[in-house]
Length: 505
Image (cartoon, rainbow, N blue to C red):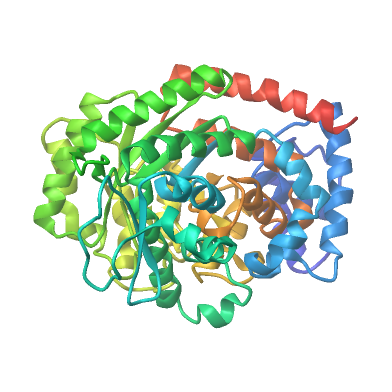
């Protein structure tokens, strides 16, 4: 190589010798091109993972399976998930990822964990469940021992058991409930022409579920079923963003947040007793970012109290809701400064950078999240547009929680090959893969998101080492205490070795 290469080579050679990211030192026997390829590969997520012989065999098998999907006429990550899901479900790569131990899911919302079929076919068939139909052609549910009080913009309440008896065949009714509890549609581009449209529908789906999941007995059953569905997808630990709303009893009595936290404790204890290899779950208490500054102060004070009273189950605090329409983090600076001012530890796990609106107040959320010492960043879609903040995030070892399907469905990116995480993972930026709201998207707990990330972000350059680092990261960047975290990773690696051996049979 001549010209610019002649000038560049001494620097490259020195870099290769000195960099800690390189998986092996350059010994002069490789060409400049081979050295550059090795150096770039070493920078990627998983680039420093050394595979043993069995892992290398599985990686060879995996690469052949990937090649088949890459060469298919329709490449799933390039398509909207609602259209691609059928193809993904038929993929041998996806089948392998389903069996893979995935460690932890660190970015999941409380009432979007459980497949909506369970809500409709289990919960709405319980005694004392009423439904009313709204002016906006949706519905609301409530459990009540007697006829509930009427609500504005809603029909009179009808006992669902009576309604089903009248219509005989309730399949169409159940399907209408399912449609209102998910975003799934055959033609997502027509149904959701803009971000505001899909977000309105997104938040509407939560409102439909609200009366079901806030009924106290269902609240507990829903969480247990959510943990079961995540466990079935080979996840061993979950951190749940939870609004901790007021729950209600059949006679109308209301329960506060302390009741909800105790309920979470009870459910997690029961679940881990029944599934001893499941590590547990913790709650990140959340509030909608539309609240005002005074409400924010009260909420952060409440979060500090909950964290003090429930240290084993409560991980920290976050804001939720559409970032572009909500208030920026800096608006809440007085409230967010309270823990430090009072000498109280309250970890933050901020959603930030879930936007493509560059230069707005909301676009500064990434910087402010780091200034307020966030533990992780939810989404961080805008991070590559902020080189200084990106460098800060890397130096502070603050990972991004990447949720590929959510980012696509909520119209931040259409082709997942163009997702900013592709560049970040090529640079080895700390990331974890999560699923955000899988029930609303018709996705599995985590496997579909792993497929989209593995195939879409890295193509043929991602290998088994990439997957291994991602699943280790999920526990490394969890809120678990350091000793528990260390033991969890040891357990994960035992499961990983078993997965590798069984996948070679």
